[in-house]
Length: 364
Image (cartoon, one colour):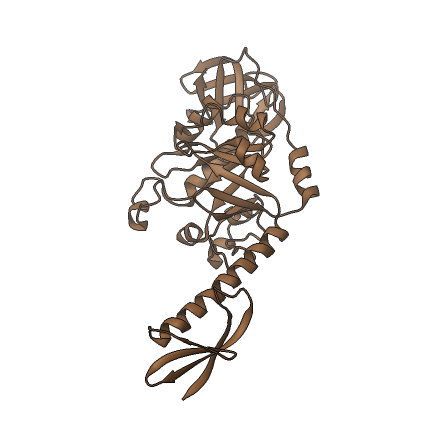
């Protein structure tokens, strides 16, 4: 009995040839043309190896096509990674994004920004939203370490995942700030403080854990807010041309396709990448004469007036989570106090009115 098994590229040939697997005197034999090869192992091994060669060829074909489709690459790192900006530049890497911190803890390597700029790599930063700490704890550290609001050409990214990669889902949900509330609060406070956009880094697994794929969540305002932010997704699969989308996103900007080290594809051509870099503007540091900083916590926002009192004219309104800075705090009574602000607009805001806290104020 003999039958044709497969057409494959044999490891010793380099060309695609048909071969026959036959059985003579209960021994497996491979016939290639007029040549017979006696093999001292079961036929199933031959079949499996042939299948593996085919899968490897398929994998290489996909990777080659992806490299052509997404030629612009970025590497992401964190403290402890061994990397060289010069070596990455030599390999054709165009940028690097580094972990700047997690929760209330800053961890940006001292030489990261200088190394990138010296070697002509675009750079950016990411911060892990840690569900063990509240949003104010996150923002205090960020505002303390990034007073100049310079987040690099590749911008600021929120790392949305569990505090520890090995943490089981059940333990994540036991952390005090697990879920979507913390993510929304941190993003809103950051935007109110910096006035700059930011992006989301996450993967399909964490998105599913937080319910971002559900019909009900997609009806919520937060789903739309997230989808308006650029997506940096993580998915390691060498046999796909595009990563899976989730939530309400319809496109991705960066795709982390490999880890150890972490490499990422940019979803665009040179013109789009140049447009991204051209939008990089360094915000000047805040005025040095500020004595107070604050965050609007009133759900309805606060009014900005020409003086410290409701009898003064209304200039503008600041929504919840807006960051303010000021030079003078006027305590009218135990139930009412006003802050003279010079950012984001000149005027007076009530930080407390009728014993209701409207703006959380901290002394610089």
